[in-house]
Image (tube, rainbow, N blue to C red; front, side):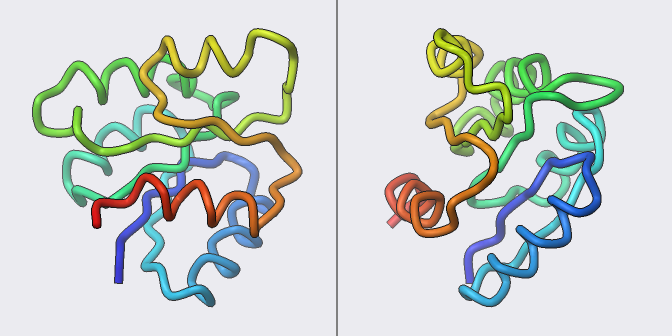
Amino acid sequence: MPKLLLVEDNEMNRDMLSRRLERKGYEVVIAVDGQAGVEMAKAEQPALILMDMSLPVLDGWEATRQLKADPDTSAIPVIALTAHAMSGDREKALEAGCDDYDTKPIELPRLLEKIGKLLPK
């Protein structure tokens, strides 16, 4: 059962998405801000990280940069999750080191497809 790290500060989004992912067979660990996400990624070594970009303490852009700069976490795929689907956001997410990008509200089938493509086989 692959372990996913969900970094999300909105409690409703966090609860809904983690329950839906668990029903699909994933183990989900949760961090509520970017700094906790970086620390949790190092401690838990998840198979994949779902990173909200608008986070307190350390935003998702900077948290992803730190994870990708650290040899212990640089290989973990990161999917950016953002409600701000502006033109250029996808490029910005990829430049920060994210491996893929998805918009909120989350469409679970689309997100599951992206997770499936990025998880180590």
